Length: 89
Image (cartoon, rainbow, N blue to C red; front, side, top):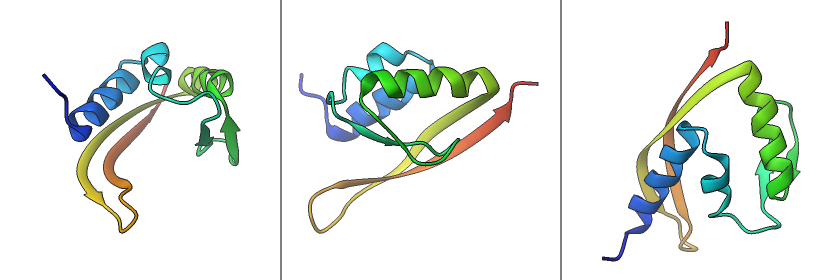
């Protein structure tokens, strides 16, 4: 059974919301560039992303759910999300 792109992305978001870093990272390339929306700038590579998320999740509790999927003119998938970030306290 083949999984659609949308189903795959939804699964990855589920892993993110479950804080399963190894599963989320398994879908990324080694040289992935990830926006650091919490501290600013970018982090590069799986190890930096793991460290970033570990620091971030000690302070805040984000939940991100995809709500819409579209493709742009270059064939890239654009995902609209609903995100709620709670303070750990």
